Image (cartoon, rainbow, N blue to C red):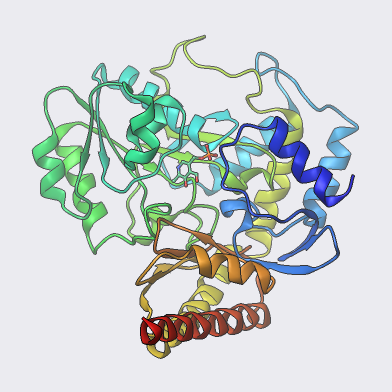
Length: 403
Ligand SMILES: Cc1ncc(COP(=O)(O)O)c(C=O)c1O
């Protein structure tokens, strides 16, 4: 198939729900991607955080190949060696107390499970979410997501969801009633613009939840797996939630969702009350074992902390040089550069110059590279962004003059 045919067929037969860019990628290795014409790109998007290990990590490739010849799928009503190995490795690294998990296939599914679990474990229905939050687009997860453009076309959503202002524990306090089951929070809001919480916020929310007997759910779908410089983002503030939602990179790029909770909470589910036929397939779990091994052996959290600090400092230099940059935010390799206007043009220009970045809301350039990105690659990306910001400033000032 040639380029035109590929794009035509995708457009013709796939639901038109993705904001497509006119590029066809056919190969990836580490931090790099190649398009169909062999042009090289530095991937600072990682498929929205999935490719944390980089593309086609040799250990993931070997694990998938080996397991594919052994056993690909097996329903969770039977036991499996790779599933046991994966869950053991996961429990070994999750914050103490989070030791009972449900395996699914995506971030939204991890959140769906958390919603059902909160209702079942507490016998209550209300969930407090945060303005600006993103938790996915299935009906339950969507009900917790804030952006009206995602929610409004699908009303009515599930009832008893309240959204409160971020970074203000009093607002959570005020929203709690005797029907409240849980509070759900992304420790750093991703889609909402890479928003790091103010000091003590998460600790204070935990105190409120403890005092009121309400579950604290952290959605770490984007912030975990070393991304922010710690294995789990909540470890920056020493707050362990009652339930945690994970997904994206945990199976080295294969689909996975994980809802992990304190044992007394997860035990609220009785047989048959929650399931998916794909739960914990041997192939996904084999890839997951390899992914967790690489995460620990290559100290990816440490790398994200060090390289993220360097990356952020370089972006801050750009901010001091280019007035159109409003702010640089983030932790580790979860970074955002907020501009004073829409970032679409910047993202498209970056693509044309061989760098993949994504947006986080209308005005934020989101940078989520594989955690193995090198300093040299960071320098190249910063150089490209520097050029683009300069071009944008020139274009804007010349259009102002000609106006
Ligand atoms: C914090 C958070 N929660 C949930 C989701 C939904 O995950 P998925 O797209 O795998 O359903 C995302 C996806 O970006 C996310 O960032």
